[in-house]
Length: 230
Ligand SMILES: [Zn+2]
Image 1 (cartoon, helix red, strand yellow):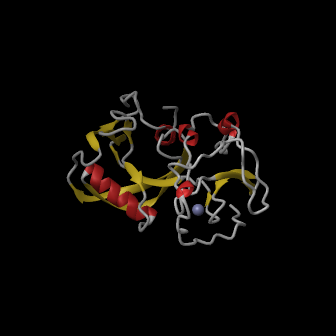
Image 2: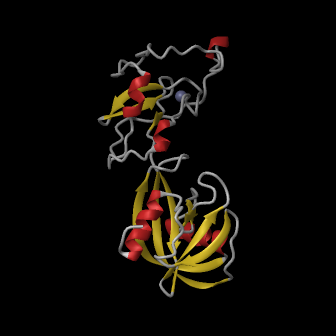
Image 3: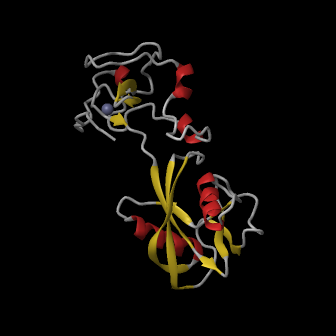
């Protein structure tokens, strides 16, 4: 992705008057200030559903309905702009641009006698649904670190990461759009037990897979694993 904008993070400006307070400032959606003479377009609510659609054109992108309303650095209402051939939301005061990138999540495929290890989600979203053990990557982790940590947290098993099983995009997690990175792993220790975010855990054959696989990325990965649709 090209990022042409020069991004300079400025210190928040001192509030000059009461109307700088985003809680009281009136933002008219039909009026966009063109302070920097950049190309801007008028925000029309009915246009919002057409923004930020996933590349694959899939309509499962529930996370895309949400967006930031205010700049996370200086709290100025974001305005719509057009850059890199995309509509984006940007701050007119401090040059922050919300790129709305997907978030990486990592996990592992553990097989035993042709059965795959799945965990049951303890919390929303999709509480009660089953997934491969996986979770969001922290800022100070590599994908391999994340897979090792998530598997130990969710399954109690210590693993060594071997190689990539597959990488999947998914837009049906209401929290954010996700890129799921799944590794082939080898169990090197630990004791199998549901932990942290998991309320149950088990090995499943293709014939006995739970009906409620929580996310489409995991369903796609299981389809690849078993070589037939899941
Ligand atoms: Zn700002």
